[in-house]
Image (cartoon, rainbow, N blue to C red; front, side, top):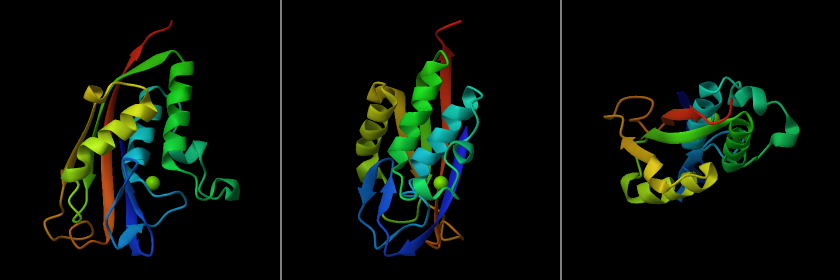
Length: 155
Ligand code: MG
């Protein structure tokens, strides 16, 4: 499993699950701040004992500034498959007050499934709001959780 949270600030684009959402605020971060992909990257790396996103992509490495989250997720998939594992299915929960995630859900599923190299049926995205409570509900942050099931395909 993996989780992530980013502060929302004005003047940045909001990318979630590889999809740009219509918003006047975006996730502050070293990368594009895609919490769904970050949580998923951590879930996959952890499931196969290959570390975490911070180890692979240190946020104090200037050569990684502005790196796309899909690049990090793809690298995790590459390491996972190279180590003899396959991805069975994944599930992601996005916590965001606005805009609504639901209209973009299937775009996110398709985009992440393509990076993972699996059928879209194996990828799901659910969305929650923060009930007006901080930091999600007050629009100060976006968060995501992800869980991944993997299988051993090589000894
Ligand atoms: Mg992150």
